[in-house]
Image 1 (cartoon, rainbow, N blue to C red):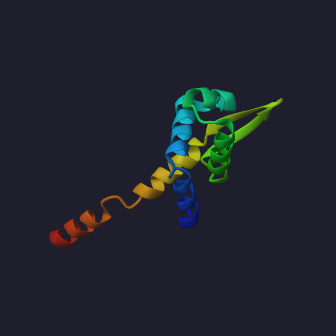
Image 2: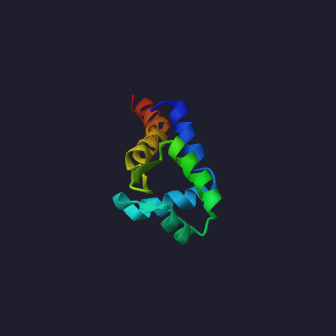
Image 3: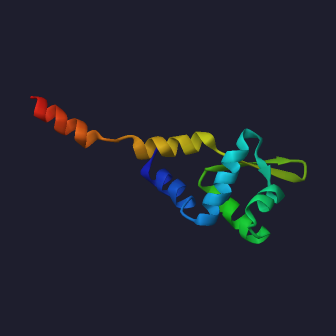
Length: 104
């Protein structure tokens, strides 16, 4: 994952409302939710919710699928896992390097 991609993904989650929407979709799992269901669960106004979904979709952390006249929204678990891996990829490396240097 590129730094720019990671920054965009984390920026999308940088709003309390967008984070609330994303967690709602994560909780729904692969079935996803329609916009009205997200509204019911979050209490976010329709126009504001549309803005947040556009931002989350643009960052790739939410996927949308048209089914007839409805749109199903799903968390992109693959992208979320990639973001988690990106941020954790160098976990404790300094401690490991320090220990290895001390063992010599």
